[in-house]
Image (tube, rainbow, N blue to C red; front, side):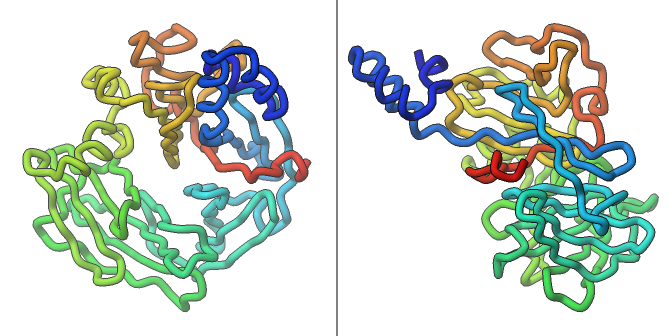
Length: 310
């Protein structure tokens, strides 16, 4: 009933809710569901942006401004894209809906992972980039909109054994990284540039719930992560995972206990893994991260009036 009611517009939801108590309960519950993210794909030549509503299977196209053409998308958060121009070696924020663009200083150092904390118009916005070298040293660089340059430093020796595919995720004023080799979480506080280590055996329960159970946030092999989790661990959560970013939703009745990847199957539906059913949908074999999360595709939060931009 929740699934049916969730697909009705508000006007029809209210009308249907008047039929009986069970419909009323379901209707009221889904009226406060979260918005699901949309998928977007860059065209091969980087001239346009294709956005897909994964639940309605509808796609839309946006033409990119000249400055954003042939750029690489690195990260997405709250409707903003962090993009990179390899030729000029600079980053910039771009909002594909409002067409706003915010420049960042040039960044000469190669990067392996990058993320930002808040939308670029926020006073608390900071960008963090990680670079791993062959000696397992980690250089961490930070910057913020309006800065004149990046600040870079090599991490302390006891924090250098990062797994090369680690992801960085922002949570409560700190950026977190996961180390597969020694099963630890590392955190970095950008303002003080201080580090902390969290052995998983001693991790705070709230951190355990938000991080360790959801290992694929940190770039670990998805198949291994999924096989170690159960529906009860997921607590009804829904993850939207891509090559560049991940989105979490706590109240999507029709997708509880699911991981939705940025790959579309042959039936035009996105590929997902259901913990309740313990299988992929559509039911076929997916072998690696690139198949499940192809590059140049990621999840983005559309504005409430998203259709006004097409």
